Length: 310
Image (spheres, helix red, strand yellow):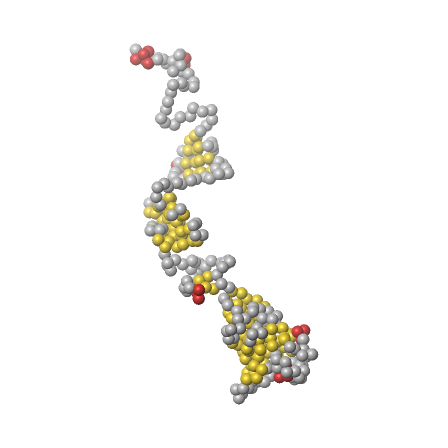
């Protein structure tokens, strides 16, 4: 206490008159267990709306500092920090809830710690962010247990838009037979093999599409030979397939030609990985289709669809 201040003995003897000379600043030998601002700057501000501000003197969300609101906004707070973490929550000793979210006193969601990662969810529906295995797992937040075959992603009228995958998807099961690793569609260019003189790729009109689902490829096409073919025994072979076929598996398809209504033409894919065509006449005989079969005055055209595996 300053030397010009009243001492305890004087106060006990009844000398309770305190003059300006008895007061000094800063106070010395003084301690406080309450709010104390003994510094040379404002540490805490309570404004006329009963808002409590720390680190700033006026309410503004984008100004660094802390605000605890009163009056109509009581219970709301803002925490703004420039260039650093604005809030941190630390649970020690055990897994469990770190933050709870409630409506009218009833919990509607939570963020919880579990095995070094977090669970975010509501009710019995949550996601476990498994950092150790780089995956997201549907779980029950209350029990931290996985929920197999129970949680949907989106709905019939609440669909997500696009899904981008660098890998595949397991559909209907978890075995290798359920794994879909590819889907693709596009166009392909027909090439004719062993074509005799007078027929070239330039003489082929093409409108050809393909669809690949997993290892199954379906191609469709239209070929028109605008120049009458010569009498050649060379096989009529379609090449230029968009994907190399697995020739150990059978292929299936059909071809409809502009002529020869009594005949059927079926594809066959041998080790040459090209499509050969066989003519089945009305007696059931199979014959390799050659360019000689196409000799005629009018252009030859064919529509065909073939499915094969890669």
